[in-house]
View 1 (cartoon, rainbow, N blue to C red):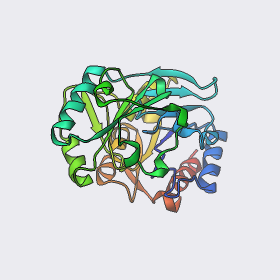
View 2 (cartoon, rainbow, N blue to C red):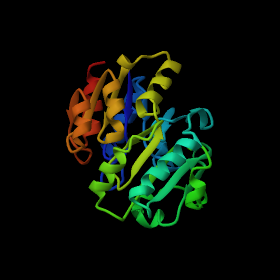
View 3 (cartoon, one colour):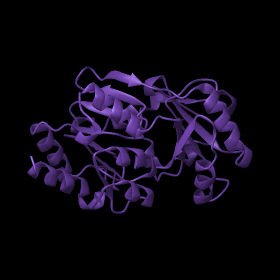
View 4 (spheres, one colour):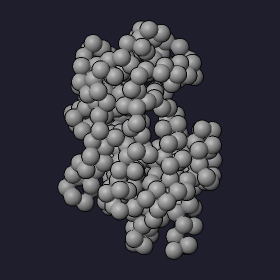
Length: 267
């Protein structure tokens, strides 16, 4: 068995912490030979405050990059979105939101290239990366390089409208998702948390039937549908609950820990 978990809203509570009970559950799983793998939209640098909770693998940037934590944080694989797709997506967004702000994760997560206004639209609790990773660029430069993930924010219209319009763009080669944060994320079509997990499990000699996944957002949908068994958090997005086989209590009620504890009882 392998337990794959989203972070924010699933394992990480609304106060941005992992509960002692959840940490104990992770340790118990690892002791029982069940790896617990964070599968997150965050960049690798965004894990630095909680990295100690995990012993071996991490999938970041919505599954586009896999890291072996026990082998010097070695990059196991890294799939990028072509610059042409990034440029086409930026142009499409700017047609209805000309002042939209963008951020691109580049160079295996070591560079966070952002346009003017992006950081100002970002909540303080989202700014969890090393300041050295941030690099301001012009909008015209965003689409000139491949990236692991592109993010877009806008203050020109209500969030619900912006999310709906951006998710419905249908730019060729682009896959969009919304995790619940005030932004929309884009990776290349075919790059999701599910494809990242599929690649990891193949490397480990496992199959999807061996995976139990937990998540709460739109960027978890493919993972929840792919895993042999999956739990959506009760307070998560409806699309996540629709994709999962089961429902778990909210993160703030230690839903993750409750699921893991019950799974370990069956071993």
